[in-house]
Length: 570
Ligand SMILES: NC(=O)C1=CN([C@@H]2O[C@H](COP(=O)(O)OP(=O)(O)OC[C@H]3O[C@@H](n4cnc5c(N)ncnc54)[C@H](OP(=O)(O)O)[C@@H]3O)[C@@H](O)[C@H]2O)C=CC1
Ligand SMILES: O=C1O[C@H](COP(=O)(O)O)[C@@H](O)[C@H](O)[C@H]1O
Image (cartoon, rainbow, N blue to C red; front, side, top):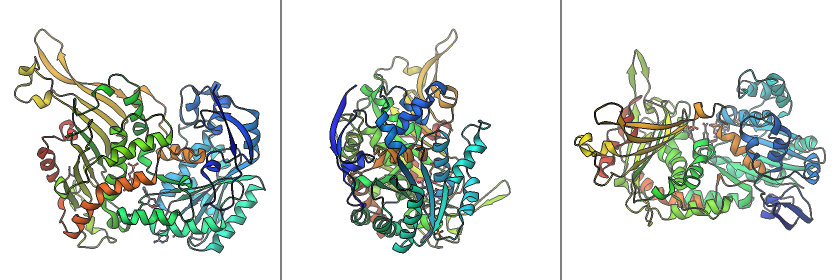
């Protein structure tokens, strides 16, 4: 096994002072050290692997190390014994914390992915006791596989490690008190601290300042996961990054885009780069268009206050869909290392043309009654102004100015309160030149093109639409699917995106987090059109709650000779 020797410095007490080096290998103090070359495979995963290998039938979460070939060293074990991990969820009383973060932490604990010595702190202004927090959290914890043994015991054990501290987000004193409580739990051991900012963005900087000055680790690493939105446009995003960097190094900032943690999005690179059949087709020579589609069958219920400031383009397109696009379209990275992958993503984003207003349409849902039930319109939400022009739906056509993708439309569509919930990538291939069977398709040769669909959610799957002879004496063709349905092929439940991302942040793995130059490139693509949209006060096309969205999306697609694949499926 290849090894690598380096000198590792001890980390310092301030968040900003923690160097990339100490970030990478935080558990070690000044000395020369030999560690496995495959450093992205963490000690936690390795330990889990070593302990559970014999019990696991198929890989999931921590067991993903089965083929790593790395060995555990006694040194690693000893270091882990003497270190602690504290995870502080800031905004613990909120929706995301309850729905996603605490359940993901429990799932990691349940799967044996957290270190032996960890504690979870909730921090928010709401006055709660430890017990109140535990009761609140316990309502949303589930065991991955129902009836799995020890689930109730595991929940109790997890809840006993959860604590609460009430404080203001801009109070250094309150964070100093938090620091005292964290230290009590850390019992003088080497302490690593992870903060999850599950709060509105306008208080990110206050929290980072207070945590940095008063509650960062003195002898281990301190990392901060920042939830989106990262600004509203290029300027505000740049300003946010600048402010955060007064207190944190880039290596300490983990900008989360939870779509990158979704199984099928992670699989994109595997599909492309480890199958000979796809990569040769992955260009303008064979691909006619690519569609990135997101839809939700519910409105902004309860989140109108946030949503009205941002709208669907900033909420979904500029981040989730654009990130998928970057992974889809990037060139082969030099390696699977975070920096190599992120550099390729930046490159492709910077090769894209900024979105033009004429290549975009916007919509907003209106109230609708169906089956005796009334569904409210967007502006019926009391937290949304009556005259709001905020889009709850948008479609856009984007282009990449490079040799691989020149002229290929990348169409995005995202909407709330539509007829269904789903997220998918659709790749429509070109026509077969001189198709011998064209008479079998009547006049619509478009119907004969192949389509690859990567269904991110729900019911994860990948299918390739091909033309096939219908069995029989005649020569009739139909389109059939070569179908990889995850629930049949991999019956284990798929981990939630937040589990993967939390584990990565704990391990210092940055591959699935957004680097600041990626963020800048992403905003540069959307900022001009967003500004124009708002300056011109473009009125969104209304569409009924529960419908397929505004008809403008079809006109936009047909401008580029494209049909939305999801509608053909319907
Ligand atoms: N909810 C979701 O599904 C998703 C959320 N996000 C992002 O995650 C973060 C958290 O989201 P979510 O949990 O929905 O947010 P919430 O609105 O539920 O806010 C989280 C907590 O922050 C505190 N808070 C809320 N508003 C303010 C305010 N104006 N000033 C100070 N404190 C406030 C409240 O705690 P207290 O009053 O107790 O201090 C609240 O419980 C946001 O950045 C959001 O954009 C990202 C993806 C999905
Ligand atoms: O980031 C966000 O994502 C959710 C959708 O996430 P999913 O994992 O449930 O698909 C969306 O509802 C929300 O508006 C947005 O902020």
